[in-house]
Image (cartoon, rainbow, N blue to C red; front, side, top):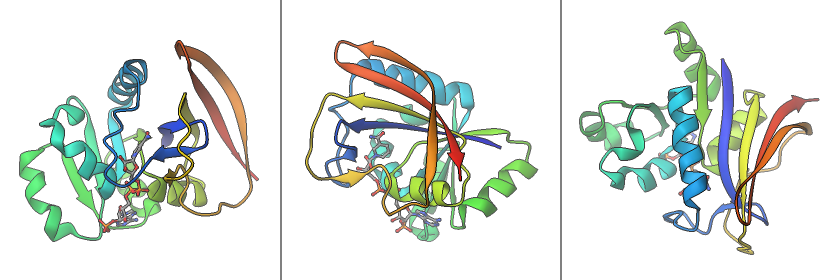
Length: 177
Ligand SMILES: NC(=O)c1ccc[n+]([C@@H]2O[C@H](COP(=O)([O-])OP(=O)(O)OC[C@H]3O[C@@H](n4cnc5c(N)ncnc54)[C@H](OP(=O)(O)O)[C@@H]3O)[C@@H](O)[C@H]2O)c1
């Protein structure tokens, strides 16, 4: 399974100011990239806090994509399965969920956050590539792209582009040591 993390962050490495940040500080260019890339990949992986912030879009955020949401509160989230047909809720380790997806023929997934889920996937060496947009903001505090300390890894820059006046999109390969 190829897993690509897709994350927008402030220059000082925060992906949100708080849990209920609506991410409206992001640019249209970044949103367009996110929509295009996640549709191309087809399956999105996210934590329940990220889902909570996306579910208010009347399902638009899930159009033409499948979504897997990690939560230990399956009963609480069950009702959303009928509201958003293409969203599935799981309570397991990243490795088990990825193995199950692979056995169902899924070959690629986009890991879209937040920091808690990204940390688990990096820690278990499951992330192959990272796209990250460096948004021209400094927050000073907030939710880190990676929730906890990580084992050492290197990033190899594959590509970069300027996607709007003050914003860079970086594309890295993850090399685990
Ligand atoms: N800038 C960006 O690109 C970007 C991207 C995504 C999110 N965000 C923002 O980041 C914030 C959320 O990030 P976050 O790190 O706090 O939360 P998160 O990673 O989205 O969600 C964490 C929650 O998911 C559930 N979970 C995670 N791993 C699990 C597992 N293996 N099994 C079962 N449940 C699991 C747990 O909640 P429960 O078990 O209690 O359900 C956990 O507290 C929001 O503000 C969001 O808008 C920003």
